[in-house]
Image (tube, rainbow, N blue to C red; front, top):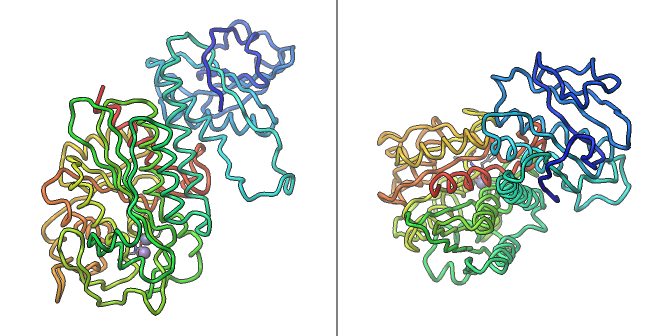
Length: 478
Ligand code: BES
Ligand code: MN
Ligand code: ZN
């Protein structure tokens, strides 16, 4: 989407749809207060009143609610609702007069983000004109405000479009999004930025290196796994950050096959991978001063005569042995190799994103992701970034009693806890065995990666994590 900032009045906005906010109990700006119907405009939160003040454009008065209650999240939601209105009107251009707000840059970012995310559709496989979808798409957004907002607006455009690219990867079905396709996307990202390099390990290299988790999960099917490494050298004085993302391009459960109802959702089991790849792209595009190493282990999880079997013992990249007691607990096996590898490559603080456990949906639903961490500072930074972006995280604890539940009978560890309880925490306790004392935070996004149903994420892939990770880095370097 084209996004810009122009200091213009509502009447000169030159857009098919012009949105202007109205606080509850306050008056409309003078230049529109006289328009026919303006007296009926309501300021209650989410109220929408359409006015035709004369001239080609339509004016949309958007209720902001109480002045004291407005925040960035509410603005993102309103912007998405307005994008929906633009869509119904088949408006290709939109102008927004940002409301007066204590942090004008934050308001501008929220409007840009809500508009870009709200206007998103995945229509790669839809025939043109096959349904009653409007044909016109929103192509441009103009913020009617001072030129000083241009930086914030551009930043928001970059990370919001990155989030939409992550959604494209998520939505792409598993017959089009294979490990090699994620690798190709990583290569594109590296080709597009001088400060980004890429390295891809194929199946032979993965097996030769002793990455027994990725090897085991991938051995059930003919599709070869990939281990994808992106490095961004942005400099700065801080420690090297590591991002790791689960890239299971389809999770059937393996020999422990999942029930068929709903199994199609398991194309989304690479949501962590899409988030860390596109967050890396956005951080590089923004030129943020940080050194970053991003590692994505990617494979399918398939059943067959060659598949890993319950009880098989594998050796992970760091030398620990693991009993595979449930072939559907495959995410932790591939992440274990990737975490150890990221640290070997120089990551000094690591964040992993993974659709790891169904249990997190039971605990937190689609509102918060779970963060489980060995480091209070990193956990706190993620929580702050979550509040700022609306990609919320809630911390769950670690404890030696959970770690005890992951001990193996004949091997060092089991990939399945001795009891079902605390499933998200026991999964994280397993991962912890592969980071030693490196500050690390695991974000379980199984509840937030799709079907979040917030106005600006809708159904389907949410792109969760892209904005969270970009914000984490922005907060670290500012
Ligand atoms: N990819 C799934 C987790 C998942 C489930 C994500 C539902 C989104 C929605 C993961 O690989 C998995 O199968 N986890 C198992 C672990 C169990 C066997 C210990 C689970 O959560 O049931
Ligand atoms: Mn699984
Ligand atoms: Zn999985």
